[in-house]
Length: 113
Image (cartoon, rainbow, N blue to C red):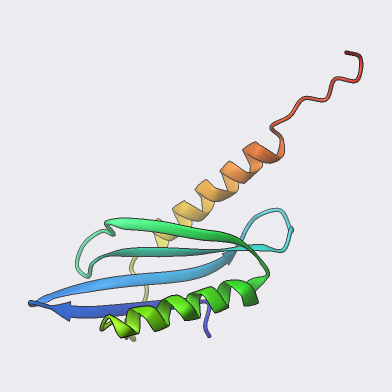
């Protein structure tokens, strides 16, 4: 399974698009995330969702495979089109990394008290 996927479905003349990408989280921790963006094909994404963190890319890939299989049942097909929402997903990855960084340093060490 590739680490990125673009799916689309045509319904009533409109094309719905879903792009998914698997990326490592910052910090060399071995954690990965799955980010999906969805919306109409010729516009900005209306939803961006992330799942994870996952311990390793293979776990994230298996989740992506399961999502793709479920979307195929709903009529989505793999699209050969290139990613058009990669900047939106990159922004979500930056947000996740910043959020994780805040929590990793979200403590005070005060041995004198």
